[in-house]
Amino acid sequence: MKFILGRKEKMSQLFDESGQAIPGTIVSAGPIYVIETKKTSPTDKYETIVVGYGNRRFKNLKKPQRSLIKKVLTDREQGFSVIKEFNNKQGTLPVVEIGQVIDVSTFAEGDQVRVSAISKGKGFQGVVKRHGFKGGPRSHGQKHSEREPGSIGAGGQQRVLPGLRMAGRMGSDRVTLKNSTVVQVDKKNNLLFIKGAIPGRRGTLVEIICK
Image (cartoon, rainbow, N blue to C red; front, side):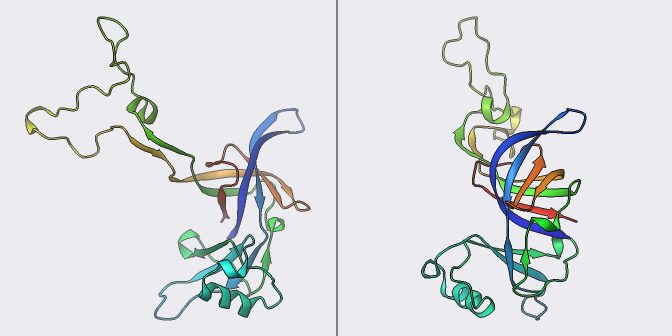
């Protein structure tokens, strides 16, 4: 299993040898540092690899994180803005060592990856935008009910059934895209070009896993 963390940059397109345009998203990925290896103690009860990504001042970190980073990476002058665990639920863990650096060179063009990120938050939205309702007719005396949900009654049960599609908070959900394709790997600038759109705004943390 190959994995890396990154930030969403922007959408763009590439052209293949036949001139076909390939739309995709540019991700600034890695490098990430292994700060803790597999946990096998009875208290943990699972195996995992802990990695750090990004930069953050030591004074802004919690004391356990600060001591762990200083113990593992003695020559590092900054902490990590993101500390993430990868466990066996995502697949077979690779063999890594503490302090090892993982960058985009582990990926290759054509790799099928699973991409996870937090989608854009849209706040409180009505049923037309949130669920695609048609709304009421624009004629026959309608005045203020063009985007209303309509009746929510459930017959003789005298209650609203659970799961009824109504207005509410939209977005800010963890979205996972499966079988996305790595189109191009820029090792010099630590960039990955992934086919298609990736959830989230610019700067969103992106988790990329290739089994």
